[in-house]
Amino acid sequence: MPIATPEVYNEMLDRAKAGKFAYPAINVTSSQTLHAALRGFAEAESDGIIQISTGGAEFLGGQHNKDMVTGAVALAEFAHVVASKYDITVALHTDHCPKDKLDGYVRPLLDISAERVAKGENPLFQSHMWDGSAETLADNLAIGQELLAKAVAAKIILEVEITPTGGEEDGVSHEINDELYTTVEDALRTAEALGLGDKGRYLLAASFGNVHGVYKPGNVVLRPELLKDLQEGVAAKYGKASPFDFVFHGGSGSTAEEIATALENGVVKMNLDTDTQYAFTRPVVDHMFRNYDGVLKVDGEVGTKSKYDPRTWGKLAEAGMAQRVTEACAALRSTGTRLK
Image (cartoon, rainbow, N blue to C red; front, side, top):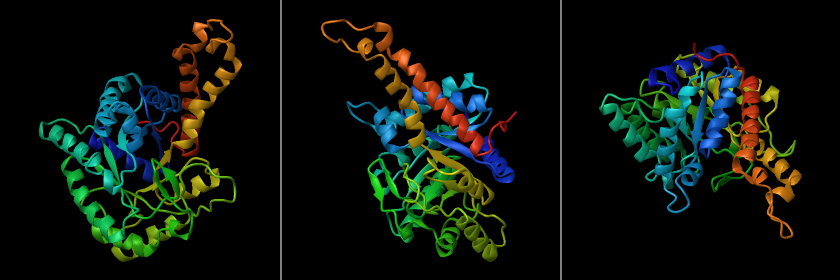
């Protein structure tokens, strides 16, 4: 069962919450980065999450028409085939989708999965993210209610982001300032609007100073202990201990201590993109610098085919990214926790 069924995905998240570990959620943009992520999980003996952002889906759709749904569906179908060769279980997820892209991305994908479920099949994706952090909280949660109902009908888990993550991703940016910290009041309004599982399961991307990208020390102040305040604030009103399944956005560049604190406070998923992009690209750069006279036709020469063959440097890129994924599994305590 390489691609998780809805039931297995729920079990994965429950196990992570109970065991105080989290799954690396690795952004992919190609069949090769997909294989790198799968390889990294397999080598760590960890289950995991593969995700595709709107920009990643557009890239996967091809530069001729840049269709996000085509790109996401194509890679998901590819994953259902090739993942069977890896002795792990992964869930497929779509990352950050703002309001202006819902009709061109998440809503059509929800419809595709709903059609599959109606035929007795499993959904194509196991979870989708609604990023309403640029909207007012009232509007964010209103759209969240609509999408959660659709997700439940398609046996899919919804991820919601209720307050901004700093930095930039796929053209959406937020300043790094005091607005990057979710309040207990924000969490209470979320619980009131979306329930605590009674209206459908959702993952909550709360903000505790998170940013996309990697910044020099001192530029970003993460406060993962804030997640404990949110859990306890909502638990006090609703009587449900540790009510939220949290997502750690902007995980690249985080310290071991910050990650450990987040895990103790209910994080079950941590997004990684910038670090894995670098880990994929760095070996390629090294190869090109070391073999510039082979990869280029310099001074009338013809180069060396074995040096510029994409398979040569592509294998190095895959290995580099896979290694970074295994490191993420270790940091998030998911190493060796795969479903048997």
